[in-house]
Length: 174
Image 1 (cartoon, helix red, strand yellow):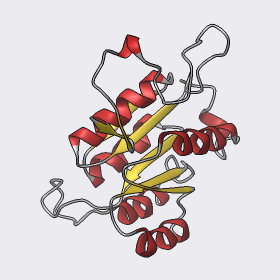
Image 2: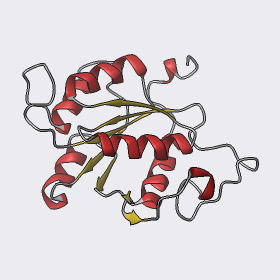
Image 3: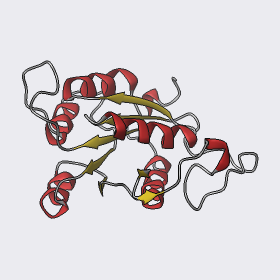
Image 4: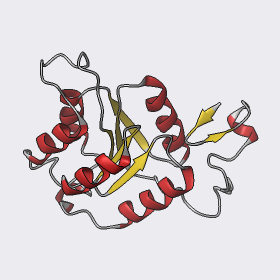
């Protein structure tokens, strides 16, 4: 099965580490996601499940959304530490009548104080030469082409969550 850019044989989670190249020595160091929440927004249930499994294995609490209105609502209510956001959504996704895409979702999040400063990582299967510059210009902190490369994503995630929150008033409440 191909998840996050590499082919691997199907096996039980106990047989392999959560990410290629990482060990599962949980007693030595706490997981990077301990006490952290991530919102993953994608219309593809396979992508959502893959991210959920990967991020849960790192200790993150994962919240998901499949359309723009749910994404903005969850970002405001759940106050995640990071949002992983797809760019492209089909026209029939969502019930609001708006044509959502990742850039619209980012703009809507900026309108609300409780979601405006959440770091956003863009993921897309679209053309990176056309989308990367626009994503960064709209405030994304990172950009990844699907399938996402495990190690690069984890390094980026560590860098992002290692930074202090801009809105630290809610960091103690969780």
